[in-house]
Every structure is written in structure tokens, then in C-alpha cells.
Image 1 (cartoon, rainbow, N blue to C red):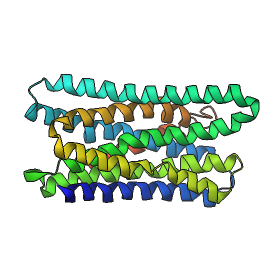
Image 2 (image 1 turned 45 degrees about the horizontal axis):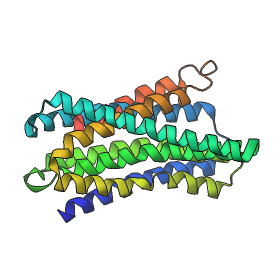
Image 3 (image 1 turned 120 degrees about the horizontal axis):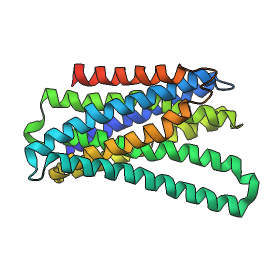
Length: 267
């Protein structure tokens, strides 16, 4: 069992490192290129939407049909909605904290609040991403440790890592725009991915010892990822749509296609 958890840790450390690589792009930008930033955020959204189905919901349905006495559609639907509800509640909590800060600190807190919201929004949705990777590796216990299943878990980690690159940049570049140094912008950008190894280990442990939780955990992560993609990334990447009407759309389509290719070809 311990080697499964170790593999999950290594995989999520890898996804974190890709976040750091994305954050490192701040070194090359004095000011962000709006078209490039929209393209990168759209790519992240497309990857997350595709991963939610092929890497999470589809395996959740298959696992529920094999191992659960309850209807698969019920487990997956409840898990999906719970994941979305979790992210909605997290967003409300951050918004409430921000409102309290505005009242106590006045207008000078606006810049600080924007920074806090930016970092927290990315950090919060990195939690279910780490869980998704951990859950994927947790399924490799006992007789399920086959080359095919291992490749499926690695594919999920690769997909998460791919979309972590633009997310790291999406944190560090706006921070640079707000006047932060390159060093501090990079540090905060990569820090947004630090929760993934922790969540990955937790996800692997839960599945190893409580296998029945797998379909729910997979669909929970899918619900969280869809909400973040639709509520945060897609609206954000549509900035300046009148000037650059298809930059974000190209990113979404490309991200979806890349993740679909990885899952179908390697899964």
C-alpha cells in the first residue's frame, strides 16, 4: 500500500513542478500580453473540461457499476454536485472574508484583496486536482496494478500538469502587473500548487483503505473542476473579447483536444 501512496506523492510533486514552470514565465514579461494570457487560460479551461469527463466521470461510472450496490448514475450525480457545491461554498467563504477586509481596511485594501482572491481561487481548485491524481493512483492497489491502469493514472497526472502550466502563469503574471517583483510573483505563483501533493497523498490513502469511496471521489473532483472552469477560467479568459474575439476560444478548443487525445490514446 505504501508504494501506491509514494507514487501519488511523486506524481503530484510533478504537477506542482509544472505549476512552478508556468509561474517562472513571469521572468520574460514586464507586462502581460492579454491575447497570450487569454489563450493560456482558455487552454486550462479546455483541459479541465475534457479531464472531468474522460479522466474522472467515465471511470467513476465504470467503478460504480462494478463495485456499488447503488445505481451508478445516483452515486456519480451526487458526487458531481457535491464537488461543485464544495467549490461554490469555498468561493463564498473567500468572498465573505474579502468583504470583511474591505469594511475594516477601507479602499486601500482593494489591491491586496485582488491578490488574495487571485491566489486563493487557483489554490482552492488545485485541491480537487491533487485529489484526482491521488485517487487515480489509489486505484492501483492489489490486483489492479497493471501497466494499462498505471498508464491511465499517469495520463491523469500529465493532463493535470499540462493545465497547471498556464495556471501558474495566470497567477504570477497578473501579480507582476500589480507591481510585485519577479521573484515574489514567481513565489506566489508556484505556491498556489503546493496543496496538490498534500491532496494527492490524502486521495491515495482514502482510496487504498476505503475503495468504496472511489466513484464518489472521482465524480466529486469532476464537479469541482467543471465549476472552476465554467465560473472562473472561462469568464476570465474572455477579457477583451471584442478586441481578440477568438483567442480564448482557440485556447479552450486546443486544451480540450489535447486532453482528449491524451486520455483516448494513452488511457
